[in-house]
Length: 305
Image (cartoon, helix red, strand yellow):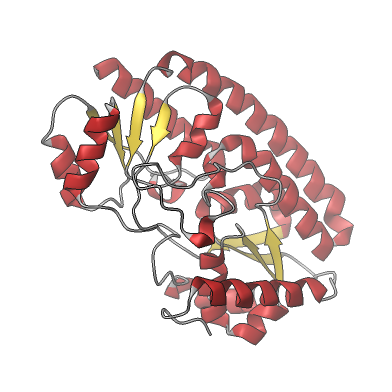
């Protein structure tokens, strides 16, 4: 198993070996509903839309996937053991945690669907305030799903993977993915129009990932990370916010309270709280709800500036 002392190179090699073994396994049609373990709640929402009445989904992680010692939520470990397939983002911190939970041999025997293939990524996953890029994130920012234009790519990857497991339902999954693609395209067009007037805004995000949303135009999103998964001190972040002349500072519900207090004690920018996952938005169950919530918060903040 991986341990906290494992180097990123060891994790990379072991995870790669695990995926090769999994890919070599022969696909077999599964009777009844597929039990699908999904690493992220927002991607789980996409898988549900694609899988429809043929899947039973649950998510494995809560909070930031960058944090050290990431672990599968204890409440779903039993369900993970019985899952037919694992849908993940291709980020090795996820596969390392799943490997720890299942054990190397069992994890290698599972079918894995990597929904990151073909998705557009922010090339540099950290802001230039430090210029450091963690080796595990060299392919780009792992929060690629926070660019909703990647939604259709994720849906298609899920449909193809599920179709391999249930060939008789392949057309059903692909049709659902096509419907999802049309819906998200309409939503993206609407969001682009709504944020177009906000193009001059500079938004600092304490939460990783929102810079992916910059692909739609509108505000420019910037974050500042020294070590992935670890926030620099409030004082250091404050200095960066002032240097970039931010108009809006976004905090996540999971951001430690001392950061909120420090930012709100300053003047010159608006501080808002915006969830970076539907798991923290009351009543939200769909992928588009994540961006509806963000756009609404940005528009309201801009009015109060």
